[in-house]
Amino acid sequence: MTDQSKDRVYIFDTTLRDGEQSPGATMTHDEKLEIAELLEDMGVDIIEAGFPIASEGDFKAVKDIAERSKETVICGLARAQLPDIDRCWEAVKHAPRPRIHTFIGTSPLHRAIPNLTMDEMADRIHETVTHARNLCDNVQWSPMDATRTEWDYLCRVVEIAIKAGATTINIPDTVGYTAPRESASLIKRLIETVPGADEVIFATHCHNDLGMATANALAAVEGGARQIECTINGLGERAGNTALEEVVMALKTRGDIMPFYTEIDTRKIMHISRRVSTVSGFPVQFNKAIVGKNAFAHESGIHQDGMLKNAETFEIMRPEDVGIAGTSLPLGKHSGRAALRAKLKDLGVDVGDNQLKDIFVRFKDLADRKKEVFDDDILALVTAHMADEQENHLEIVSLKVICGTAGQAEAVLEMEVGGAEMSADEFGDGPVDATFKAVRKLYPNKARLQLYQVNAVTEGTDAQATVSVRLEEDGKIATGQSADTDTVVASARAYVNALNRLHVRRGKTGGDVKEISYKDVS
Ligand code: KIV
Ligand code: ZN
Image (cartoon, rainbow, N blue to C red; front, side):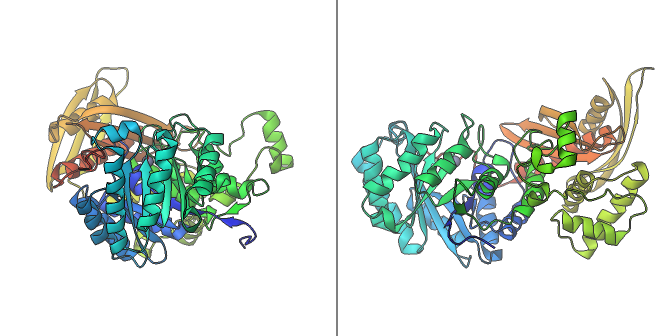
């Protein structure tokens, strides 16, 4: 039961727009639809689904997400240009509850780029917000870099936007420059000063350049903001954005000093965090609040002893409240399909019968190799299943690697490339190097390896390894992830996943969101 005596705060998730904009986080169409579905299921109020003018792919993703949505408001981003706003409307209008979000950079630095005077920019804001409002009765307006905009000018443009029909005014801290006290007072003063401010919702959109995004967002709520813009895992350009899981759990855990509530089903947090990590290729840091691998781990004797006596000694929230099945037992090779289904349900993963069949085969195979299969192993299996469900240009058929002290490592690889099966036998400086060379032999490419990272999913020498790979080719970045008890197999799959993504990106027609310029407002 939600406490109606508290003020409601709307959660606006921009993982699919601001999050997806971070270099290398590009998601496929199907992945975007899946994440949108999980966000709606979790109870997010508004989903910013993309930037429709940016590319055909972005437009289609926003349109398809809008068509599938039920209750959630579906929002698209548009610069302060009439064609952008029209394109955005064409995509979001299919939603039962559409929203247009239009923005322009209002700080001196941002005004200088399109070379608009204050008056010219004010006219542009009036024209574009009026246009958006004539199309859609739910319009959000943002003065980008608001926290570095002159106070008088900020008040002036916010008033213009409200008069032109904006229903939500978002105050972005675009470069993560503000601090909590200033964040609260900026919103409070705007609400007190700007005529008409009490008729709209104020939103906060904080970037994390100084590590204060979540604190700044919560302070803005104390100042009167009632919409928090955030992303899963804090995904976003540079140091990222306010993390959804952090603000939601902070409000839930410290309702005594922050009497505000959201409608988020927090038990879905862990699953969506893992899915976003996988599809974006951005691993979650171990000590990340709420969703990091160590967020509920206790190593020291004193802590472990305290935990055994009373979990509240060292935990301020219960793992099960964020979707970590606290005390559940690991599965083993004798566990059946019903146990696996129940475990998936516990972990917040809904799968159809066919998907369950495939995940069960993977589970049995893993259980044969590993004594106990933990929750993290199961989630890694789901991830691998989802990745393989997609149609891929490259598919590994088999891999055999010989390595050790006797000489150079050798990899014998069979792979399908565009449907044709081929094989290669390569030597290298260690098993991973030999394997990657074999992949490159069968699929020559000039992608540069920017990151290769291995993490153990659970403890023990039989643990699965999660491998993340990031590639760069002509300024385009693609990431891949995979997990297996064999680190070399996981590495090969992660590399091939990243190459498949690059292949898709090369084939993309139209502009790309990374290449469209925010500054181009004329
Ligand atoms: O950070 C920012 O200013 C943005 C705007 C487009 C709202 O993401
Ligand atoms: Zn942003």
